[in-house]
Length: 75
Image (tube, rainbow, N blue to C red; front, side, top):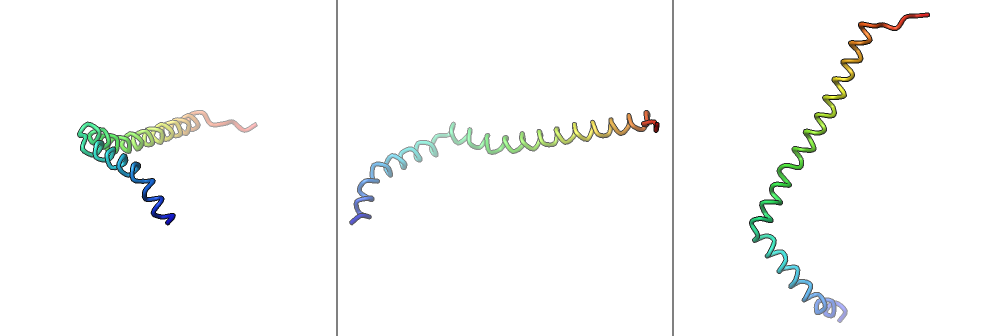
């Protein structure tokens, strides 16, 4: 009895959900936007990660080169 009551109450929700799914999946602009986001966002994240690592590596090499040119004197 309780399960049947839940099914009766959820029928409008299911209809709205199906309507919204049909409207979004059949919308070419929405699909284009989703594919674009899925395609480009990981590339942007990986590129920024590599840029940060490259900058850190460059600073480390630069500081090592400066240390070789100007070694610390012992007192």
